[in-house]
Amino acid sequence: MAYKTTNPYTGEVTKEFSNLTDEELEGKIAKAQEAYESWSKTTFEERAALMKKAAQLARERRDELAAINTIETGKLVTISAWEMNLCADIMEYYADNAKELLKPHFVKTTDQMAGNAVGIYQPLGIIYMIEPWNVPFFQMTRPSAAQLMAGNVVVLKHASNCPQCALAMEKLYRDAGFPDGCFTNLFIDYDQSSALIADKRICGITLTGSTPVGREIAAESGKNLKKCVMELGGSDAMVVLPDADLQKAVTGAIMGRMTISGQVCAGDKRMFIHESMFDAFKAGVRQAIDSMTVGDPLDPDTTLSPVCSKKAADKVRSQIARAVANGAVAEEVGPKVPADSAFVQPTILTGVTPENPIFNEEIFGPVLMLFSYKTEEEAIALANGTDFGLGSSVYSEDPAHAALVAAAMESGAVSINQPTMASPAIPFGGVKTSGFGREMGAEGIREFTNQKYINSAQIDMDAVFAQY
Image (cartoon, rainbow, N blue to C red; front, side, top):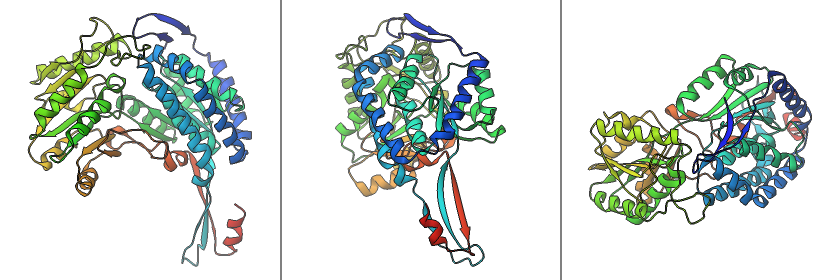
C-alpha cells in the first residue's frame, strides 16, 4: 500500500511516504500501551484542558489544514474549512461533557440476593481507528476526541491518499500537549493491519468505510473477540411528501447530494418525490446544479469540484452506464466538466427500478436518482428496499406526519426538512449493512469503555457510590 498525496484536480503526485517496518510498528504500539497506562489515570479536568487546546489549534490552523485537505481529497476548500470548525466543535463538546456522560450511576433493585449496584465507565486501552479519505479530519476527530476523553489512547490507519492530513492531526494533538502515544498515526499495509487487530494490546476497532471492507474488518474483529464499531456505506433515501415545501426540498437535495461532489456516506442518493411535485422538484435541482461553477477546488469561487481520483470518477461513470443498460434514463446537467479527468458530469437518473442493479448500489459521486411515487406506502417501501440503512430524510410541513414517516424509515438517523448533518451531541451510525455501533454523543464515548457494575446486598452501596 503506497501512501502518497495525489492532487485530484491536477493529477500531480506531490509527496510519498514509506510504510512502517514491523519493528517500527511494534515500537509505536509499545509506546501507545505505555501512554495508556498513565493517560487512563488522568482526571477529566486534565484531559479536557488538553482537548480544549486541541480545539483552539484546529480553529487557528483551519485555513492551513483546509488547504492540505483539499489538495489530498479534491473537495472544495470552503467545505474543508467548515470541516475544521466541526472538528473543533466535537473536541469542545467532549471536553465539556465527558465527565457528565461517563459519570457513575446508582441502580436500585428489589433483589435481596443481589442488592443495589453502582455502574461505572472505565477505559479499555488502545483503540484502533481505520478511517476513509472523504472527510479526513472529521473522521479522525469523531472517535479520537471521544476516546481520549474516556481515558483510552488511539492508533490510526488512515486512507492511503490522505497521509498529510493524518500527520497534521497527529501533530495537532502533540502540539496541544497530549503525551506521545496518545494519538499515533501508522503508515501500514493490510497484513500489518490484520496483525494489529489480532494484537492483544488492541482493545477495540472502529472503522468508517465501505460495506465490503466492513465485512472483512468485522470478521477479523470477531475472530479475535474485539469490540468494534462499523460505520459503513449508505444509499440514503429522501422522501418528499405532498405537503412539503418545494424550496426546502430542493435546497436539501443539493446540500445532501452535491456536497463533496456526492462523496458522502450519509448523503441523499435516492430521492422519492410525490408525483404532484416531481416535475417542479426535478427542474429545481437541475437549475441549482446548472448554476454551479467548475474549477480548482482551492479557489473559493468554485462550487463543483472533482471526485477523489480519476479511478473513482471512472467507477461512477461505469455505474451510470450500467444503470442505463438496465433501463434507466441518464440526463447530464450542470456546467461541462473537463473530459478524461477526476471530474464527473453531474447526472440525474430516472426510470430506475428495484430490479436495476444500481438501485442497490452506493454511488460515490454527483448522481441523483429521482423517483416519482403515488402513495406514501409505496415511497416507504422503496426507501427501505435496499440493504443499506445509514441516514435518511423526510420533507413535510406537518410535524406529526413527518414524525410517523421518520419512524418508519429503516435507518440509523432521520432528518426532517434537511439532509443528514453531523452534530457532536447526536449519536450517528447505521443499521442493516450500513453497520452497527455509534459515534458522537453519549453513545460514542461509551462504545469503548468497560461498563462495570458493582453490587452487593451485604454492604451499604450508597457509601460505595459516594466513593465514585
